[in-house]
Image (cartoon, rainbow, N blue to C red; front, side, top):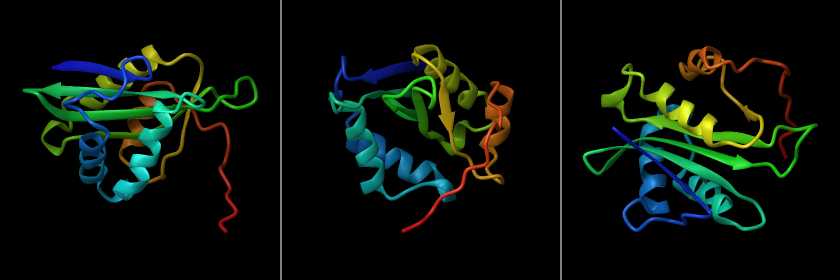
Length: 144
């Protein structure tokens, strides 16, 4: 297993393009996912010089088998500096520790604190808790 970090410094790679990463996430996020067009917006945020973030990929036999996207918030102190937007593991790799490995690589690369949103019934919630994430706030949204 190889792990690759892609950020503004490395830019979009030829093999692991934004389209390839978005296609992987669209399939492997399952029912917790977003449309490809929204995932592509998230990836564009990573490479926007006024924004930022990074992508952590798990690679096996030249194929993506896991992906994490963390976007920088541009804030610190009152809002965590980073937000975990997406994590997905190929269905054939689930239950083998791939999610933990991906998250540990991403946590190690991130500068500052990391926030995330997770639905209560998402199995990834247990992973986040094992990694030390806590539920400090109840999120409320006004949908327009």
